[in-house]
Length: 67
Image 1 (cartoon, rainbow, N blue to C red):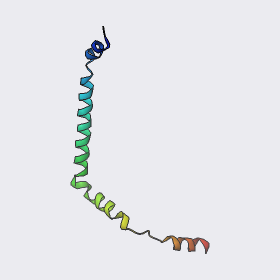
Image 2 (image 1 turned 90 degrees about the vertical axis):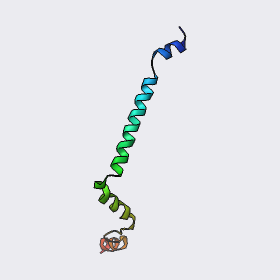
Image 3 (image 1 turned 45 degrees about the horizontal axis):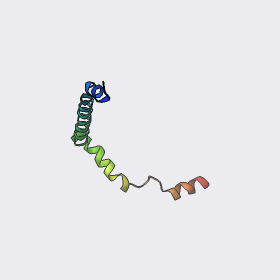
Image 4 (image 1 turned 135 degrees about the horizontal axis):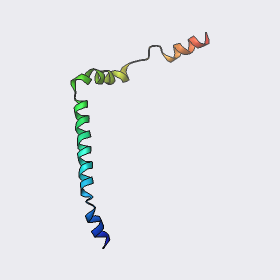
């Protein structure tokens, strides 16, 4: 019995197909979650996040600590 015979009898293609189905399911779930209307406010907040300043500037905080 050769190694090729052993490997062909293990039906390893089934595992590859199972992995593909799992990957596809996760991909579809992420696409649906990303494009869901209920997440729109969260994405809007994240979109504006780089433009939002701190509540108190660092120079003001430093001055308050030394006072």
